[in-house]
Image 1 (cartoon, rainbow, N blue to C red):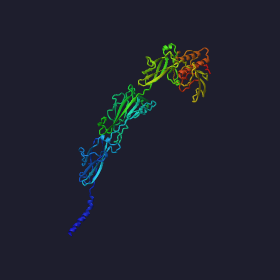
Image 2: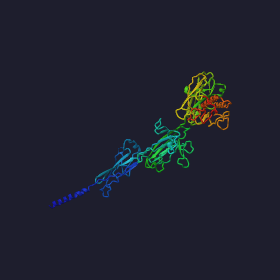
Image 3: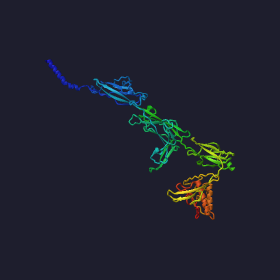
Image 4: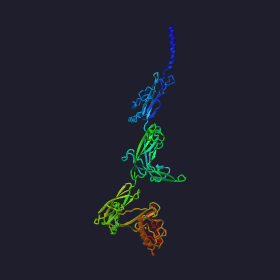
Length: 620
């Protein structure tokens, strides 16, 4: 009985103690694999699970009795061996620390870009306490990607109509100066063809970096790769800069030929004018085109030292560099010369009485620079050049003509037995300093021809070479919509058909006559005087622009007016003749906004006041 009582007592004690025993059951540890890391390819990785906790541990919750197991979970990198933190990888994963190396860049590059884990190595830590309970945690090792350098190009020519002082160089050079960009007309992906005279800026602000929160590299550096020496082009930068995303390619000093100074005047009322100085791509002659290479290097960490040269990758401490190369080909944009050909007799041929060459109308004949010449004559051809880039120094190469000492001239001897209708053809090639060439042809047509004459029929109110037949709404009407009807007549002594062409010619504010300028205003010539004081300086020996025909017409008109018994009809005819000649040599002699003719007979209102004397009537 005593034994039975003791057994019952023990059982009751055990039953009473069971809830307390259940409360003290083992708890699983808390695994901590450490923070995520970003490392370059080939870098050493040190991991530690020292942050793991076992709440059942005797020494204040540490995990001293725990076991650790490290393993790589990422598919492309599950072959990596993990060893102790203090040594080379030995595939010993039982310690709190772990060590391995990030695969090389060559291996990373072989991983398919579509694999989302190409740039991430996931490592799992499993912690087991001394009672067998487990917990796990993962840590990501991000493989640092190279920043991507990207170069954008801005190339613009100046628009001189823009005068806004707040626009900067981009605003004042808005005209596209890109001839061909990447992939155009055989260009490679990094090649640009640019016009000389352009404002050119390279922009690296579109460069990207996948890793930092900004998405952009931390520093930038520009290098002129080739040529090593080149005037008026930006040199290589010796150090990186966090703000150096843009590079203005053209450089210069005050007074350089590629300097553009834009003056905006006194904008803010302070002393001095506001100006913008811009340097443009210089003239590429004599070695056109000019090729220059620039490289942009970017770094995704702060360089060491802070002004370090990141073209040396080791100066991009703890980071990686990326680079882009651009090839710029600057082309000559000189204007193509415009060449005309004139024909005249040589002195010897003229002294023999040969007929002078006559030019035909190319728009009608379909042959430019065609001249009718006499058999047996000697013709001197002269090439005239208009070139906005070059005043002189052109090279002339003639074909079908014998060049003279002045290479812009050449001589052609027309055979004496040449028959009418025979032609002599040739050309002249003109080459400028930029090696731009243009070839212009000529044709000498053997024959005899008398130039037609143009005249006018009597009209209202002015008779002369061109007669006004009808005017509606007033001749000097300031309103739009006036209608003027004119009629002319032509005559050809050879009996050839005549083609009539009309043109409206307007002059500028100064009347040009054979490169001479008729002064304004001119005083009225009083009646009964033969002296001509055309510019009002008291000198009565004036001439009109050196034009002999106009001079003779003016003198004839003045003589008729100064006669003792002026003949109104003769004066009217002389006036018409004078006006006609003046119209032929100087356009209509009026400002562009003025009408083509004047009722009062003046050459140009307020320009050349050559009205008949008071009381002298014009013919009706």
